Structure formats: C-alpha cells, structure tokens
Length: 212
Image (cartoon, rainbow, N blue to C red):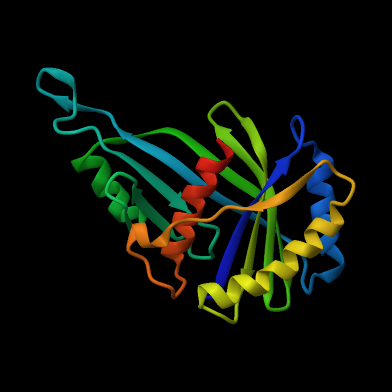
C-alpha cells in the first residue's frame, strides 16, 4: 500500500502559471524509471435532489445531507464516500452508487478534478497536476501526490517523502512560490496509523478544501 503525501503549490503573488507545472515535471523527469502515464482523481460533491412522486417532483424527505464521492487514481478505480458532518468514510462501487441514487437521489453539485502526469521513480510514484473546479472549468492551482510504496507507517513514510519534496522544490527555484503539505486529521475520521486508501480519500477531501 505505502504512504502518500499531498501538496499544493502556494503562489506568493497572483495566480501560478504553466511554468510552475513544467518546472515540477522537469525536476522528476530525469529520475523516472518508466514512461510517464496520465493521472486523475475526482472529488464530486453530491447533494440530495428531488424525487419523482405521483404528484410530480418533490424535495427528498429527511435532512439535507451532502456527501463527497472521491474516485481515486488507482487501477481499479477505487471510490470512497465521505460524510463530513459525521466524519465517516467508506468504500463504494458503481453498484452501491446505483442503489444510492434510487434510495436517496443524490445529484452532483460540483466536482474538483486533479489531473496530470504520473511518474514512476523506483520505490516512489509522483503525480503532478492541476486542480480544476467543474462545471465552470475554474483553475484552482497545481498539486502533487508523492507515494512511497515500501512503508505503511505514516510517520516513517512521510519523513522519507520529504526527499522528493526537496527535489521538486529545487526544480522550482526562482519561481515565486513553494510546495505546502496538506494534512488531514485522521483521528477525527477514526483512522489509525497504518495507511490505507481511506486515508488517501480523507487527504483528497482536505486538498479539495485547501484549493477552493
């Protein structure tokens, strides 16, 4: 499984330009051990919509609950549902989403898409991309995911991830900004110190809030 760090580019003044993305990619390009691949993660904000009744469309009964549906960039298309108010996270699949849409009609209100390039570097995988708020296609900055595969221990693994952060930051020398780690309080979500994809989903929820 490994552990992961998520970072966002913090621009000192103004909006970061494409040169930031190109500099970060150029920093890891010489270190790659395989051809780069496309990478994408999406966080969709779902809110209860209206239901069909004999009297026509009506608001759904019960409290208005908002759910985050996070589709990770894993090979199996892992999907997780997060309920912020109750701090609950659970794995889902398309079948569950189909059932959810019938029982509690959720509709996508907006979504944050992170997409770019994925670089394999030995024991590391580094993803560099841009954050875009849909449906308005609003650019929200640049982000980085660092994945260290050998360790599942949060503290030990994240200390090693700092080495890649230093390489990326050196590659962006001269640009007016820096990479900032986006952390998450795993205890609030009842998650332990052994890293899992649930931790990653909670991290992307925090990253979404950080770039809004």
